[in-house]
Length: 309
Image (tube, rainbow, N blue to C red; front, side, top):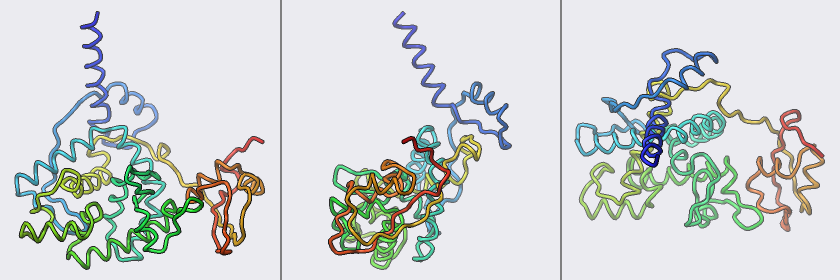
C-alpha cells in the first residue's frame, strides 16, 4: 500500500508538471478548454529561441554557458505553472499602470518584467525591508522623495514607486553604460556592479562572475519576458475572462488628518478593507497629516463591490 501511494503521488506530480504544456493552437472555447485540462499531460524540453534580448541588447546565446543558463530559467519558469498563470492574470491588471510611466521616463518597456521578478506584482516585503512592487528600501525611497514612515509608506503606492524605480534605473544606465547592467545593479547596487566590473576586467553583465542571485537576475527577467509574451508557445492556456481586471477608481483629495478610515470609507459606500486594497500606502487606520499635506486617495467607482453593513 505504501509503494502504491508513493507511485500514485509521483504520477500525480508528473501530471501536474505537464498540465498546461502542449497548448491550444486556437483560442479555447469553454467546452474544449475543460477537455484539455483533463487530458493534456505532457512534459517537453524547451527550445531556446535563436535570438533573445533585453531592452534591445542581445543575449550572447552563442556562448554555451549563457545558453545553458537561459535554458534553465525558461524551464524553471515554464514548469512552475501556478506561478506562471498568476503572472498572466496580474499583468493584465498592472502593466497598463506601469508601462506609461516607464515610457514617460524613457525607460525601455522590458523593465516591467523586472517588477515581475522582484515582487510577483504584489506588495511584497523582503526580509531586508525592501517593499512594494519594486522592492524599494526605506533609504532609497526617502532619497527619491517618497514618504516612508509607520503612518504612510509610499513604496506601496504603485505609481509613485514606479517613478522612483525609473529614476534609479536612469542613473544606473548613465553610470554603467548599458540597460542590462542597470538591471543587474537594481539587484546588486551600482557600486557593487562597478566594483566587480573593474576587479574582473570585463565590461558586460554576461562576462561577470556573480553570486547566485545577481547571476540569475537578468536571465530571469529575459525568460519571463519571453514566456509572458508568448503564452501559447509555452503551453499556458487561458481565456481573457480568466485574467484579473483593474477596478475603475476616482481620486479624493485629503489635506487634513483622518481620525478613522473605517468611518471615512463608509462615506463612499465601501469598507476599510476595500479602502486599503486600493490604497496600500496607508499603513494605519488614521492619517496623522500634521503638515496638512495633500494626499489623493483612490476610491472604487460604485457597482464594483457589494458591501454588507
